[in-house]
Length: 605
Ligand code: PEP
Ligand code: MG
Image 1: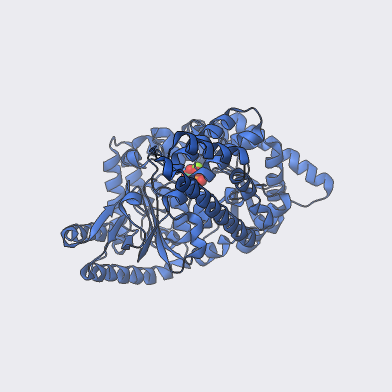
Image 2 (image 1 turned 90 degrees about the vertical axis):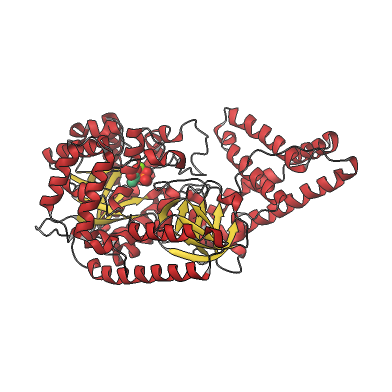
């Protein structure tokens, strides 16, 4: 929402220039900042693979194309493997062994060759048909290991098809001679995690939304990003020059000098604002009527603790530990996890560090642990559900967290609790692992605080029961909104229905806070709502104690809170609890934020 007014102004300016040779594409802004440079289209939306017949004399050429693309894919995969081994360690690189095996499978290649020769069809069609048949068959087998090879098969197939079509692939990032703006149909969180920060100026995708983990990663990495552009990967071509505006969700292809000048001004305003916000970094977030709100950071990697500190964080409100598990075949063991958690705990000491147990599933599909394709991954085998059924994974993680608890102020938090039994079971496991460590003489903080995420409507409704068994709640609004409103958080087509100020959400947060206060339980909000200055007055008025967001957003949160009055926010919350319209609640909260800190919104010269 920051720069919304200037955004509207620039959208108008930009729209006026369409006829002057510029092309403007509009999507959803997910990570602030403006960048310009050459476009690199990674992969296009695949609209099925076309079948076309080839003349008898053209068959050798099709075979040759297939052969060339297999060789090229193998080289690319080996390059990725080398890069991953270098950056993340040899054991992480083993994930690509399975991919290479698919490429070298003689039965599969022979069949594709036979189809080209017998049916006289194009190489794309032959290869796609055979790999899809294999993938379908693999998806149905009983053996879990084999079933997990389905996604390897599809991934390899997609790389080969990209090479047949002459498209660049994500792995070409390693060879970029110059910085560029990445355009892709989709970028998974695991691919985003691999992006070479030096060479990626910004990125844009056809699909996605503000709360997709790809967008969340972009904000943490401070890469300007736009998602939900629908056809950008088809409309844009590698080599075109463009400007990407992550404030307003706009891509301007072939910007005129005038547009570049105007954007130069926008960038200067951004720099001035950042200078202004710098002072807020070191100050506590205390309202004008003396009410303290804790402003903490969400992090994805142990190394992010440093950024959190330099961003003025009061602690780590959410450590998304699943990123330790991503892009690798073998999950990290207890010792490796301990080192990561210890590093964050020690860096942040004496400030609190909330370590969330593995939240895999949804859009965070991990190569090593869950490659299954589910009908509804967000309603499926996700987060605490997965951990409770994988004792060995849960054990390694909880032991590592417990061991790290003596190195700082560590708290443990369970994601996606949807019923009391899950919390009781998780706590029983924690007790069991504590007893183990005690027996082994390994030190840990026996009083480690336990938290439950409130991100399902059922958890919010039974918050009173949960509150008796935890010391804190963290409201995961990203999921709470999608589950309450039945709106997929990744789907740009229904993004307009994804309303953080929907009365149902306001009431669920209110119920959660009420239950928490009755049991002296602390309430944090760690979903993307917490990082949006427009929504901060509402959350504070509803009584939350802490806001946790990506480090780059913390300064503006503190700046705003220091200019708000708790009494005004409470009035706003009372209004919201009585209001039937999401839009009205939003505009009231926005108006209060804008009144308190106009410079966060007013970007006039
Ligand atoms: C949330 O759901 O709001 C949350 C913080 O968890 P995640 O975004 O990782 O699902
Ligand atoms: Mg969540």
